[in-house]
Image 1 (cartoon, rainbow, N blue to C red):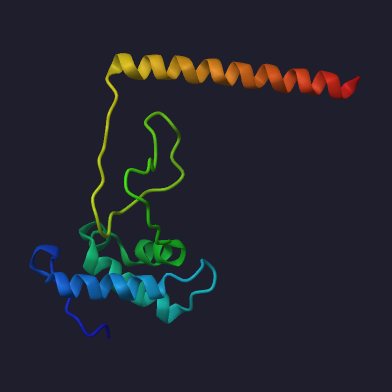
Image 2 (cartoon, rainbow, N blue to C red; image 1 turned 180 degrees about the vertical axis):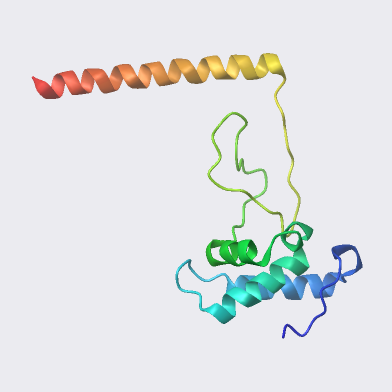
Length: 134
């Protein structure tokens, strides 16, 4: 039992929200060290804080809560960049994010720069491999 009813975020008081975030921080132990009870509590809290989690089947939510990590970022920190492959997805629990999207022309220029960097990197690897064989 969580001691709190699951309320839609718009109806949740800021005080209740802060209490849930505090509990979330306590429960987000390193991955692999959480017991089943902690995972169940993480499922409940995550569902109360975020509508997205309420839409997931319980089996998927449980799997996510086994590996979910809480991260905090400094103001103005770049978290991910357009065009780079993603290895995580983020849910904002507290605070705000700004999303900047490059125009098609800016994206093409950026991609060209990235291709040049990859070519230089590959050339350097090839030279290193060649020198290593000598």
